[in-house]
Length: 230
Image (cartoon, rainbow, N blue to C red; front, side):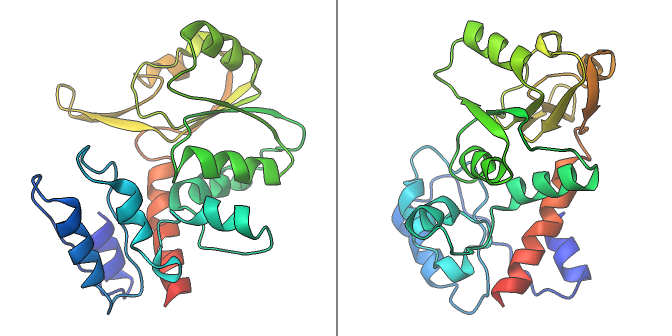
């Protein structure tokens, strides 16, 4: 896990587990008390009753190792270099490691969250990809068309089965980010559901597995950010 990985690499890691009934004010108090640490990461998604905006904004930019302030900072100053969001940065590293060319490619990002979908789209645009974003208000019919048009699908929804591998075009590349744990199967699932849905589809040129794809790289990116913040 993240704690043991950090400790085994020389980081002093403190894990704080709060009860489900914790209020926004109590969470903010915990954040403000953590001034001695170089970085703070909130585990998301936060409970529905927590004001996530206030919680993320309570973390100073130079200690925001999750990169929650990334989009805001880039919009204010395009030349700035805030700490990158962990998961999108890990996904970009995966793309680079496999020499996947992004320039001019039609890339569909499914999801628009503050720390995954939105920064993912920004990073892809910065690499000259032609980016389309689908989200919870996108109809199934439109989503099918968008998936079928995309050269690369980056799925960040966190909703198993929201995407169907049969919608993919020939030689499509799939980067799985959104994952959900199923207690019934005691396993993680991507937005495409069972991994066999991708492995059995001859149209798929490359895909990142779940688990074992972007996840481990995200942990490495987290500690890169911590080292940079220190």
